[in-house]
Length: 271
Image (cartoon, rainbow, N blue to C red; front, side, top):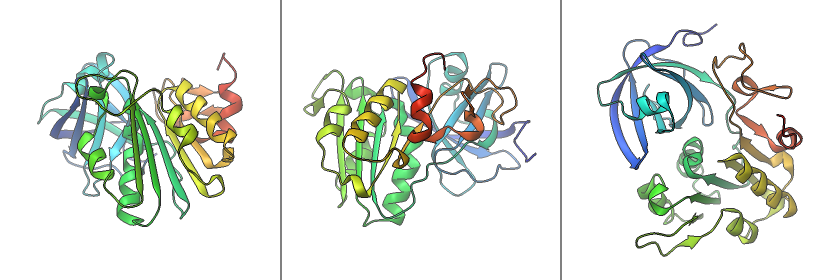
């Protein structure tokens, strides 16, 4: 057992940034001992004292001992974390789970739905910083323009050479002049070389299934498509069994899984 497996370590909210109406990004600084380093795609169990604990993926890896998590308020625990103000002490366990396997020189295709962009953000940042010549395609969708997180970063990314950023929303509002529709629509027609593309998908499960099917139809092998799966994670270390998906315990053998492994499991409704 490593520190942070069972007992949460105290981290203090050092910065709070509102992304959308119900989404914030928290920077957490260790209030004493810090946890080992996280990798893109891994998650922490965040504890709101007196309320409970939920799994939240890291949305940035500054490398200075702090943790960054983007949180959407959807329930009691995530709501308490979302509402935590600067100076609030939270409990953190981790790192848990499998990371994105996005190293290499092939084209990187990232498809995200809503808050699903958060676990992919570290991969995008790493690619920009470490592989400036690597082609990067980001297709991101949300319910409305107001639900798209990281708008300033997305605007900056769209100006980078070698980066294609496609944003789409289910319903246009305000001054939105971009695409309207599901992410599968631009994905079906955006130029890609199936023999040199690695695809990373994160968002609602139906979205990921449809996107993966679109990529398979376009010739991208299932082994080069990765998805981040979500189940009821309670312990984070594969002991309680709540996150079981067929033979997988997603807190330990996920949440990032190759689609050649995930596809047959996602076709079974009982799982």
